[in-house]
Amino acid sequence: MPISGMTGFGRAEGASGAWTWAVEARSVNGRNLEVRFRGPPGFDGLERAARDGAQSRFQRGNITVGVQAKRSEGAGAVRVNVEQLERYLAMGAPYVEDGRVKPPRLDGLLALRGVIEADDAGLDPDAQAALEAAMAASIAVALDGLLAARREEGAALLSVLGAQVARIGDLAGQAAEIASGQPAAIKARFETRLKELAAEAATEERIVQEAAAMAVKADVREELDRLSGHVDAAHALLASDAAVGRRLDFLTQEFMREANTLCSKSQTGALTSVGLDLKATIEQFREQVQNVE
Image: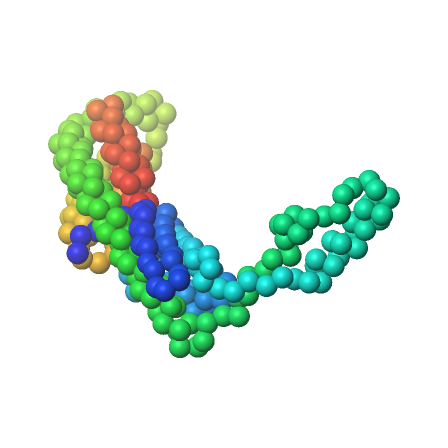
């Protein structure tokens, strides 16, 4: 399985008897897996279906699953809320008696809020379970659609990330070529520094310390070797079948650490320039990695 992104959308619709419903599953980036659910009242088991379905498919991302369901008009009985009707009549009686308003008509009274109610006595347990199972199946379809969308995003990310890792490798190679000329630059600087120390009548120990400090600062082989190793590790992760977002994120930090050290040890403008390009490419890589599951 190729790498997967963390943003996407999936939708499914269903119907059973007098009921119709639509399921939408959305996902955005997240450090961990977080699932939110919104569903119709009376179908409490759907939240568990959404959470279990998301956890079996995804490892990271903020996922929202919403179910909208309705029963067709006429499928349920209606009744008149007599108590509410009597309240309206009592409230309007003084105005009718004073002649300020005409007696209310029945159609007007029935149109008032709360007078006509749907008789939602509910389904019998078997019918309720069957309807909930059908809705849960639609949740699974929507989550599968979301999974496909995230994988499509991952496929697009793969080519971008692969190119960025290759660029990091190329820049590390350029840095290695430039760094091979650093000893000559260090030698020239040390000769200048040696004359300064001689004028200061520095001790032999001081001169040795200065030489050692310059030698250490000039040696960037460890940083370049680690960068090369990180490039190989990144290519391996991108070819992996597992969710690698967290490991790529960690690897990005290691990339940047070596690039920062390389720049701090640079003794030439050319090496500093390559180091800055390297840091810019690593930052671009880091931004894209935030989208990987």
